[in-house]
Image (cartoon, rainbow, N blue to C red; front, side, top):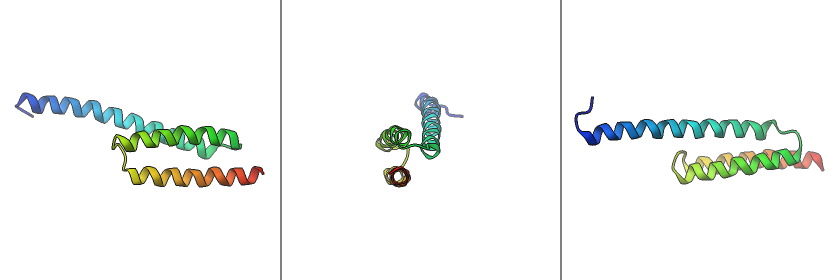
Length: 88
């Protein structure tokens, strides 16, 4: 148990940050599944925009590594493009 008030405050802040980060990671997983579950091009495009924006925000805030965000965006874009190729 921490004895200094600064350490106690740090622990309290870490709990809040941890909860916020977990929430955002969960939202990211949900949006990613939504993109992969899309059957038509317009739904995939809309979902991709949402997940791409969230990935950029998370990378900017260092919740995930920027390279991981770029990798996930790239993989989802490939899926979206394959779906578009099937449609046309």
